[in-house]
Length: 436
Image (cartoon, helix red, strand yellow):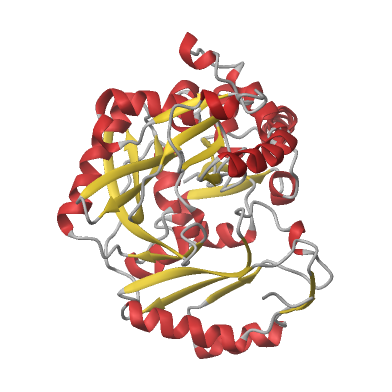
């Protein structure tokens, strides 16, 4: 019996291992198209060039093998998620429409369509031109509020604005760097049918949004043949600065009624925008004082940050859903079949440190092996090498540098936190000069 050929853009070793563990993995043959370095190790995001290279390589594979391309998919945010509908269209394989994807990824268009069906669950918002010298005075929101590019990557160029001075400082960085994302994103927009209101707001624009907050979480799900299903909710817990992520923890500890409301909003919004035949995740806040749920954003892929923690708790990685939907199969994701009652991905960060700070020591293979022996299911992923400067780390937020990722399983939240503290003690990092 032949297997289905599934191509994944930017496939790396970590995710290849996860894919090999999915249910009925021997029914698929996984092919990487574009090396991870071609996708990640750049600030240029050359979507048009990446698209052409990916097509050439897949067509060369077809010519060599005479075999069939059954699915093309991915698990990364911009630029991979944004280019996938264009690439899938060239091979006639299953994908959401480009316009429905942009209704999630174009931050202004996304808010416009969300306002049509769940207006009470989104903040006030306004698009503006960051190159307008009078931009601050054109924004009708009263500080504090957030500003971010119409399309971003991670938390890149996102700033909290408390007044004019914050705004002007943010504009200096945004004007210098926004082209890195706006130009490739505009290439994608040029391939889509956009309403006039949206067509005027291209990738060179920014969005101002009123503050929303509370306990943050992410709901993972999929839409298959018009049917929207969810399969897990993960808590996103921040450091005390309120901006930088500390850990993702699964399953969520939010009240049942709150999680039910998030599922209801998801089942309302996803069909409304026509997003179908793809996995997704939706980020929410729960304002406990007001008992109110806010919709933060929709991502058009599962989170690879959640893959290991789903596996630890449910016995399966969320990559199973990505593959099954892309191949035209009804997903059958398990629940509670893993080794642990809960699991987390931790972001070890350094704060109050200059980007010119140099890395002088990182954990050795022996250090990491010692952690693995102490905690057999732990996954340790240092993000640095000796001699690097912190500024060389890609896709960092505006307030810290993430130096190591740790995936841990436990009996409960306290057990997770205790293991994290012990892991930090076992993993040496040193810098020159040392962070505060």
